[in-house]
Length: 324
Image (cartoon, rainbow, N blue to C red; front, side, top):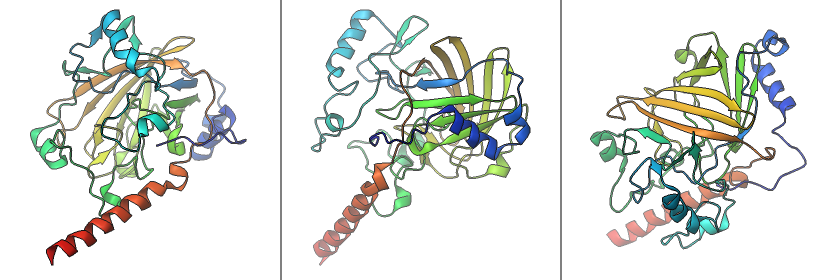
């Protein structure tokens, strides 16, 4: 994925987001003048060197300054990425990486992963899920190029790592903006222009939104913390950024707390008995973004999909020749 060059049409402005929310929600929500209990508004970044799952060469959730420096130093030249030893195209070197400037600091601790439970920092997939999806396979199983539906959501420009629940960081497109009214909260993601609208003071209605890529979200305030429940995701196995999977049975609880002018504390819990051996949790301290959100075009027309499918047809033709 790469972000397009910024155009004159800047889509991250508060006015446009408020208009999007107002168009989809009751007029009284946009017109409300009463402020919500907590102030989450602003443009934030998920960018950090800290990975969603803990890397194999890091064995603890909390790192020492010396351990952090050893991990960060070789990644600075590529803005949080390392050169790939197997990718002949040089994706890590050529794309617009924006993973911040260092590993994440959460309440003063240097963190090695977003995931805090299980203690090993890994998504607790069931053995059946690993076998079905080829998770952990050696060599790694590639996504079959036989048809578009066999490709993961980000490759199809449908769902991205930051657009749904839970939100996680990636190599790029880590910005999102929050706009609040009395009755709703809108979360706008940089990639694919996703807008997740959270109804406040109402329960989930996943059946009414069955099959939605972002699910159905309802929230309430607990003091200064916004608590959001999301369910009703698209059926089937949907991969949304790295090892993050979701199905129609997935349920996510998120907590957003403003802890300062430039800090937003984010927590989440994910459960799905069809994918995981247990509910699992993560957290991250998110920073105020230094700039604005500009237009994002997924693959500038998603030319990558045409190349993937063409490669699939080529493999089929070679297989027919070899079978003769």
